Amino acid sequence: MTTSIHPTACIAENVKIGDGVIIGPYAVIEPDVVLGDGCEIQAHAVIKRFVRMGSGNRVHSHVVLGDLPQDIAFSAETVSYLSIGDNNVFREGFTAHRATVVEGATMIGSQCFFMNHSHVAHDCVIGDQTVFANNVAIGGFVEVGNNVFMGGAVVAHQFCRIGCFAIVRGTSGLSMDVLPFSTAGGAPAKHYRLNAVGLRRAGISGERYKALTAAFRLLRAQQSIADLDETPEISILKAWLAIKSKRGVHGFK
Image (cartoon, rainbow, N blue to C red; front, side, top):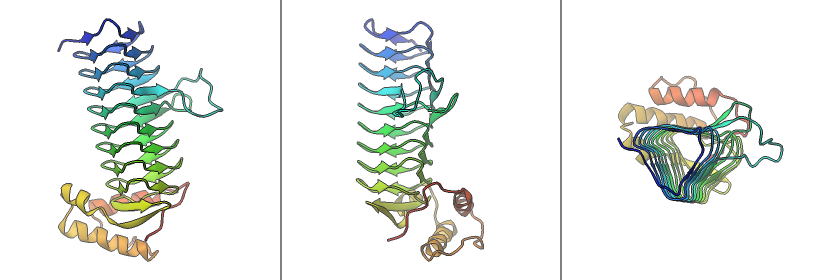
């Protein structure tokens, strides 16, 4: 693969650039950045210091990756990171900040799609194959699982957790956690039902789907799911619930 760097791009000396990387006009790559093989950095994108990026990522125009956290107590001399996996798409105007914790990292997984002007704050952890629609904004230390869909203009308070295979309806406000495998929405948000479409697309059907239905019926009634038979999804749900929440869990509609 041939690497192509536009002559107007501004690239620091100690940047590690993989094979087949394309860097467009007026892009800025700061020191201590790693770009994996096959990444595309389009015109006017900015990759700030301490970004670690895997292969095959596409960074559109006017994206800013790895800027300082929006935390008034943060010292710019702190060494912290933004860690990005493989094959993600960052559309125009997307921003993500590095961590506040010394040697810590804001983490974005692989095969995610971040639509225009969405934002990932400091110290967040984003799983794989997750989608942020336009103007989604999540606060610091938010955790978003695998295969999550965040609808347009969703906002999430710091320290919230959004479980895997959840879908959050557009313009919702999250001040508490969202259960895995669920559909939630509103301001403040409430759980409505299982994410039936997402589960079907993932091949979660039959007895596995029935087990989740039983689990959500119990949770809606504020009862324990401890005695339910184990399926892969029930095991994930039990493990997620066993982690102490800093925000509590949104209720049901």
